[in-house]
Image: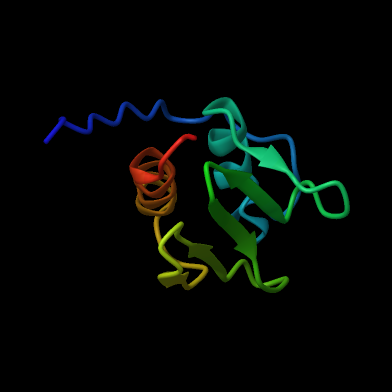
Length: 97
C-alpha cells in the first residue's frame, strides 16, 4: 500500500471578517491544494476527486462527503488542521480516473 503523506502549511492570516466562524481558513488551504469551488457557491462547497467539503451554516459547521459516500461532520470548533487533513486524505484516497 502506498504511503499517504500530508504536508499542510499554516495559512496566512486571513483578510476576511468572522474568520473563526466562516471557515475561510479551510477554503484557502483546500484551494491551495487544488480543490475547486462550485459555480453557485465557490466559498461554501469545494470538490476534488469525488470528495466534497461544504459549510452547513453561518456558525461554521461543515462536513465532508467522501468518494465512498461516508459523511464526516465537523462542528465549528473543529481545528482547521483536522478538517483540512480529512479532506486531503479523502481526495487522495479517491480513484483519479
